Amino acid sequence: MSGPIKVLLGVLLGLVVGMACHQFWTPSAWQSVGVGDARAFMAGAVNPANADATLAAQGVRFVIRVNALIGDAFVRALRFIAVPLVLFSLIAGVASLGGVGGGAGGGRGGAGGLRALGRVGGRTLGLFAVTTVIAITLGLVLANVIAPGRAVSEATRAGLAEANASAVSERVAQAERAAADVSVWRLLLNVVPTNPFDSLARGDMLQVIVLAVLVGAALLLLISREQNKADAEGGSGGDDHAALPGLSAVTIARACEALGVVFITIGGWILRLAPIGVFCLMARTSADVGPEVVRGLAALCGVVVLGLAIHMLFVYGLLAVGVARLSVRRAALGLLPAQAVAFSSSSSAATLPVTIRCVRDNLGVRERVASFVCPLGATVNMDGTALYQAVCAIFIAQVYGIELSIGQQILIVLMTTLSSVGAPGIPGGGIVMFITVMQAVGLPMEGLAMILAVDRVLDMVRTVVNVTGDAVVAAVIDRWEPGDESMANAGR
Image (cartoon, rainbow, N blue to C red):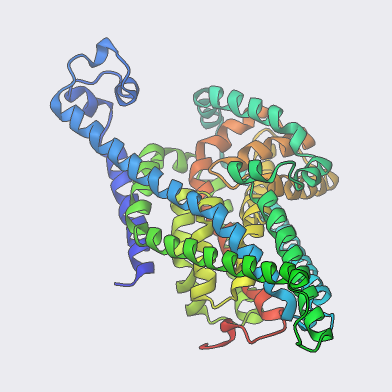
């Protein structure tokens, strides 16, 4: 059985087991084993209601904790290699651009490499921006045509508002604390790290990318300078001290390339455990959520999933097949491991090592392109989140009978684009940014209770779209880039 099939099987089994636990392990089941307060019992807190907990209850708690431990350890392992993998791979990738679009000799290597870097970066950001606007527009059109908010009854709205009141207050408080970081100027300022070591320690991927690009560009210029000097001297050697910067730059670039390969190898080891890891993550998530809430907000879930499916199949599908020239089978099977990890972890940042590996090994994208586009995409490409927020904004307006003008919906497009870029690549990160969209068009904060009820479920689906977009754009950029024939053009 192939690796992608094993990962998909892990997702499906976790979903089935989690739903079965949610359905059959009810509060009465806890009471049958002597547990009156399951929340306190699982937290290990002392509660007289749990004084009669039996050995069976202890065993159930042990199994739940082991399952959570394995799932969390899997995500932590992926996060562990994400930052060093991006740092070293991107430094090596940028330093190797001297032979692209300008040649390595004749004084053109450094300038040509920087032009290639600007070209790759500009095309990547431009393509991400275009797909994001398409996703938001698609979400607005579907929400206005289908009108999912009109399917929600007053009883459902009141019940969800009461059940999620504390969660709404907590998220609004988080949004208020993060409000200063949502403006365009703050986002632009946050790109520049004040302390590179602090950026690496916090895992601020955008600042890590800036650091890696700067180091790689400096290495590129140093290598080019020494090559030019050697060409001018006719290969006769020269002052060893003058040659030291160029030689040191080559050594550092090769060391970064080797370290990148080391962390990719570690990623391969972690990926072997992916079927077990995604099973544990899916089992816990599906056991916590259950089908009841999803049924209550089926119209919202249906519109979001429909929009995400259309965007992934038609927008990304056309880019993959029509521009990147990938076969449908190769693209679908090649991205399956990354999509499964994204679905179970709901984190594009945690999925990043798997995404880079799938893009490089399965889609054949060159290392320097994959290690640049995918980390950047995990930070700024949130098409699934943007579409989701656009649908939710219209949904809340329809539930409360608020008519949004064309101008307000255009404002949703602008605010959603900005908030999707600022959304952290972690589970539930987009909901904090979504509050700024609600505030911009005057939507009541009480409507957030309905979104929170299904956010975890829809977070899994939209993360799959985000990760797929990162991979497809990487394949497109690789196709557009000149130089040596990309591996993606072979074996189709």
